[in-house]
Amino acid sequence: MNSNAIAIQVRGHSHEALGLPCQDCCDAGITSSKAWLALADGAGFSPLAQYGSTATVQCVKGLLWKFRRACKSGLNETGKTAFLAGVLEHLGNVAKKNACDLELLASTLLTVQAWEGHYLALHLGDGVIGCYHADGSMTELSGPENGCYANQTWFTISSEA
Image 1 (cartoon, rainbow, N blue to C red):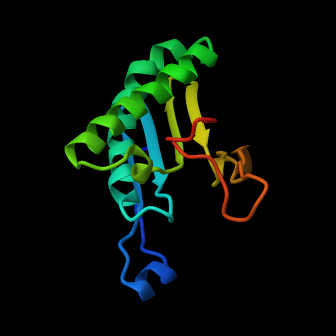
Image 2 (image 1 turned 60 degrees about the horizontal axis):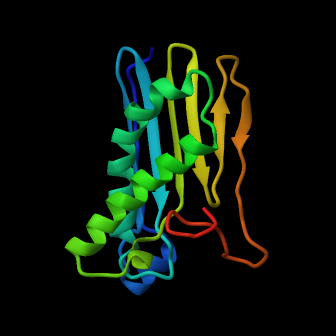
């Protein structure tokens, strides 16, 4: 497995113009046996979304390892619910620590882990998970999920997640 990984988040133009922080978080890593990445896009309506996106990515790093074995045979609805419950539990602890409402920690989530010919991909909200193939071609693994209106999507804290 190639040993290069890079993850970067950049404050958008509108956030920069308004003096708002970057509300996104991403991280990636590669070992000799696995590669993973996680991206959480903080909800623009929340002034604390950067804390939620950071907490989500940090939590997901541990959950990917925990759920890896269950994924060899496919992650069923119970597994998906348990994964999201782990994220929500972590966000609940962060909300208590910061004395804020859970809703203020909303973000989308895109994450992938690959190992030994298997992969786990979880996608909640907008954004796209793409797959780059050895021959240089690209395919869409998971497309954006938006609501009926502009700027509407599902977040980690959404009851419909």
